[in-house]
Length: 197
Image 1: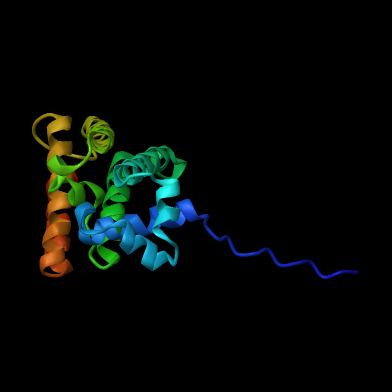
Image 2 (image 1 turned 120 degrees about the vertical axis):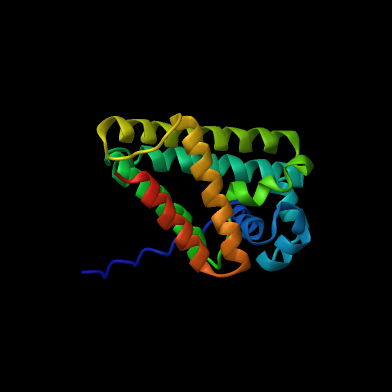
């Protein structure tokens, strides 16, 4: 009888490794603060390998935001999120932002790109707008159902409250980057206090 061969650990392909590192640099430094040379050096490849997968940095940036949009769509449709009551869906969203905080106080995608928005290529801007619109629409729906069922409370339209919550969370991550995580936790606590019935 032969011993089964252990399954090799999953090693991401070059394209995925490029996207992963570019995402880290984007969230830590901003889109305009890293180059293909940074990526190539860190990955131990030649810049030509990066150009092979992403002919321009515009292509790379658009791919990054498109990947995040796919993640958002997958996340919101997961049964462990979609099947939750509204208050728990809101908590799941807060956990995503808290996860950013736990990664060296990284900002979120929107927070990272909003400051540089006018310098971003048009396709990247369009993807970011779509990402923000879909996240806001999802949260507005959660808030609307929560208010209708009595588990969430707020004044005004669900869309306006969703926009306020998301900008508050993005700003809270920015403040945490400057100070520490205490202001972020205070802000999240205030959101819970205001929204939870």
